[in-house]
Length: 185
Image (cartoon, rainbow, N blue to C red; front, side):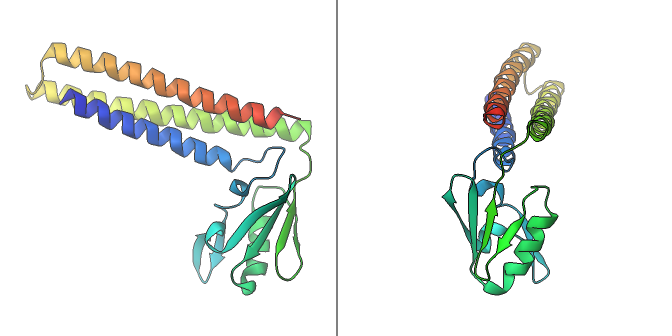
């Protein structure tokens, strides 16, 4: 029973780390990456759809992105969504595609992005700790229902704490990598 609980904890905590990595991939660094815009929500016939489902996104040069919509009628909508986003990019529409040139980041913008990364890291740490809290409560319920012994409870809590520390360290590693990427000139 404890093994299943720990396995569930690992899966849920790993999910929080994976979500963090996906979230951080959308934060702009010095070089172009399709991940910057592929999850950008586009209003398409009343539904909010990620850009990746409406267009191909390529990187023709190190500091530019090229967006080619499958349906040319969505060009203006995509352009408006990019302007409304917090990316700070100005789209150039040539009638068939949209080009985004990524200017070099200023030192101030880099610091702002690092702060944003730190906020997202803290959110991920909180998510990992919430999983630990939920599963400790489950373990205590198991002990209260006499499904496990008090010794099993203590052992389970210790193993859950070790797993939590491991996942928190993983969150920190992901954050350090992203911070290094942002500060790289």
